[in-house]
Amino acid sequence: AFGVLAAALGLATESVREIRTPHHGPAPFTLGILIVVIMVKEILFRYVNRIGRNVDSTAVQTDAWHHRSDALTSGAAFIGISAALIGGKGWESADDWAALFACAVIAANGIRLLRPALYEIMDTAPRGEIVDRVRNAAAAVPGVIEVEKCFVRKMGLSFYADLHVRVNERITVRQGHDIAHQVKRAIQQTDARIADVLVHVEPANL
Image (spheres, rainbow, N blue to C red):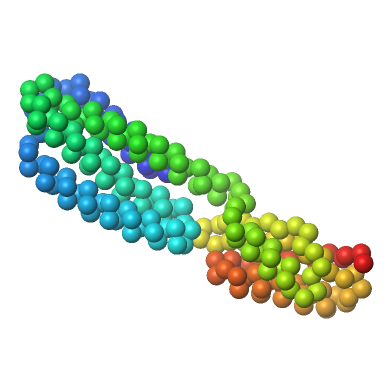
């Protein structure tokens, strides 16, 4: 995410410098090159982003947005160069102004990607159905009377669960231990990304 923001800042700085510096208009053949670049980068974005969503990886999705940033920049350049070629003299900097707009879009996407990355760094509990699956899997294990607490955190591509389950206070330590292992297996079977489960067994007053 910081890389995307840095790219937006770098492109904006370069665009401002070009706007303030007199220069010749762009060559027409660059339009053909930009079309190819836009197509390739957009295809790469869709492919990498799909992989990132499938594995639920913020890093991979951020890498995908590097390709989208290139596509947006090239698209803005295409519009700007077209305007410069059509407008003629006095429109030489049209592509640089268009690039500034692309920088704003890229920066907005960088900020959007920064939030989930910061959540992972701060060990924030993930939201969504994975927490519900963990809780429901634990509650369905025979012998579990109640799931008192359920915490799930993400580290890299893996999830780690920590929960407290209430069981009959009259059962033996061995029976409570077996229930804890059954809870762990049941939870890990719900999602292959769950690397480890820590189960605390608490007595329930019946």
